[in-house]
Length: 109
Image 1 (cartoon, helix red, strand yellow):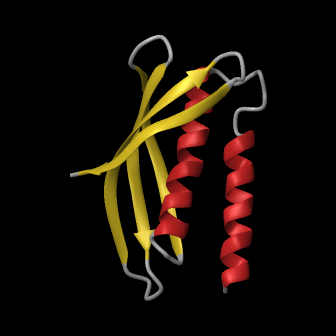
Image 2: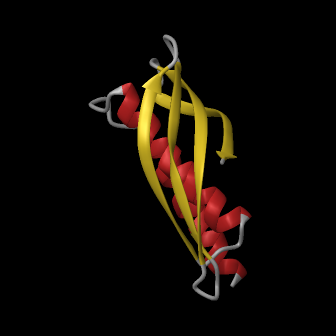
């Protein structure tokens, strides 16, 4: 089980790091993909869930380099019970590296 979790962490981290590798992505798309990977990592790894789904509703620019990503995350535990929460995350976009870095992420009511 630990090997499977480590494999999932490795795969998600690779996607998270490479989500913005294509220079064709706009900053908003880059933030959206990075946010989705981060939310799924938190759901599966930190919460020890069997599955989770992320729906990114909005990505808005706060200033030149800061973006706010908001949406919902649905957690599914090992018994199949579902729980949905809203989240909001703040990212800094580095245009030279074409990557987004998470500054803050929280579940909101």
